[in-house]
Image (cartoon, rainbow over all chains, first blue to last red; front, side, top):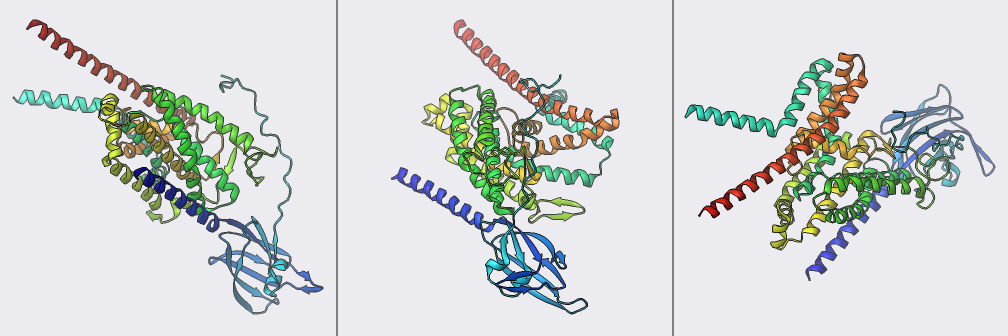
Length: 155
Length: 375
């Protein structure tokens, strides 16, 4: 009876830790979000860029984007909330828009095309995976200075 | 009467000084070095609080094996390696912030338990030589760790990100950035008073461990550990499962060391994959000894005093060395020399005390026997 209770307690503890770990994996997933202000062609239609977009995340300005510019921010979780100050034409009035975008779990770097998102296009049009530039070949880190096997160097 | 009182008082003072010679020596060193270093009190306080938050949890993990009579757990390095494995995986899975820290801690637990079980079992086979056994086990497991991290990660264990992997396609780089976890624990709930940052959450977690240790000492298992620590044979006769109790002590210490390593590295903000853990046991043990602990007796008070004194010396020594000799490396050498020196001193003092007690017991036995023969 006692051993049964111990086994149950242990299983409960393991289950509890697994649940916590699962929750942490979801709520703690970090993403790097790249915000593009670039014109886009979709289904034969061209979506033009606004003159200027200022991007705020958590009340902090993360980017001021003119045509063909890209900004970057990081976020933890599956959603990114941004506040956009959009100026359509030079010298025009600023329009403020608060947006929340769901982010796919499996992507580390996510590029969001603002003109496409603001035009209400589907996710496949405004969201794509950011592809980092391939690594430059580096020197092999295993090439270390020759020392004696006790790590005493040149003593 | 008054002369006897004076003599008694003097002897007591001498005993007190003798029993606390290491902390007193460090207080003296710090008292000399602080004014010479020229650091402001606010800077020193800030540094001490940061280092207290960073190191105290790790050092507290040493208390339970001491309670069980297993001496200073040099095998805590095993827990540190488990914590590092957790952090490497979490960094690759891109889990950031507090969730990343919690996940790394959870991942470290099964590794710590397995390594602790192995270490405890081996130590049971080398009773009376636990410290040196633990020290050598840590070298052995370091080899295993390198095998896993340098050859299995990326080839057998999936590692996705090239920022973590070596350019050859498998193995982990020398340094793993923990930028997205850096000081998240310390900054959450932190308060700033006069330019001094107090990492409240880290202190709360450390405080919880202190409360756990105080509570644990009063439990049946805690009492068993103390009994085992005092005399294994008597404990065995009293029906305590000595080997099992000792294994539990080491497993607990290893698990806490794993959690402590995660706290330590989130404060640092990067992980030296192949060297972060190598000296951690040595420095934690040195700090505990500086606080006045010994191989067979340590308290939470020793931990806090040790962290303050040891790290105060770490902060002021290079600057003092630079001011006195014009070379800051002198201070660096000095603090390394002190770290190892204090461990040597504590071990010598422990052995001397043990031999003295043994000699005294022998004399008493001889006296009793001669009295018996006389009758």
